[in-house]
Image (cartoon, rainbow, N blue to C red):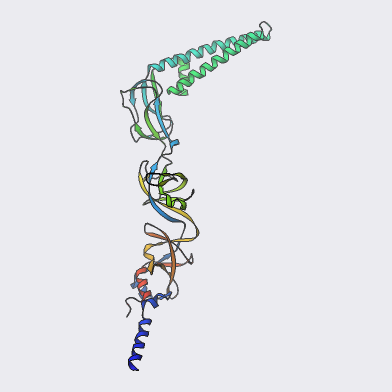
Length: 367
């Protein structure tokens, strides 16, 4: 009987000190000395509103409505360029000076139409008085009024042509007052922005509508993201996008309806919420797509989680030491993991030393 009893006792001892039996306990008793010796550090749970879904590359682009091409509607010679590639320019600033003989013709036509409209107005006012006095017929007065309206339309047309050529209201007013013609055309920027391209150099001859500068307002940028089609069902407009290794955030504004046949991806467009020096047009970045969570979710450092039998755990501080709490891993971002579980938002948890706590929980290293 003694050999059997001895074997039985050994079996009980193995069960009592087996790591699997320790793993079924959810409480780790730990003294203050052990707390410091194990290098454990505690911190508060941090609530988050979104869950990381996947990480993909993206292209930073400029909204089409924020790009402008500065060109001359007249032929001429570029006499001076004032802005270089990358310069910040303000609305109305002179970018280039063009010498154009065609501008003289437009100015002469404008002054001629102004003179003719002045004469037509005098004739109209004279015939109006004569018609009121019964000296002339209504038909003659109506003909004078029609000619006057026609001349006004010609003035407006000539003025619009000068606007298209690049003259400002101030320049046109000065021309009308001084009657002085000039072949020098000033091209101005239509917006506050940045020079992205300079397409000509000083001394070059221009054709009509030839582009000179490309300018863009970079205060708002887009992220063009190509997502694998099997993942597109996870996304919707309004979801957040985070640019890796920065604090730049964006919101999805468009989920495309067509699939790229070459790589079977779908375009997702996100609007960057604010400008950031680390983000530039044309840049390729890595972004993380996230989704708003319907349940309570928390962000914990990776060093605060432990794995056992394909289950994740964290260690919640209590009066006896630490309670072992199983959690669900929803996603990862940089050095943090997003989790959910039966947790108290006010609970202090181990944010460092989870490996040592796991070892003590499982009884590893104990005598």
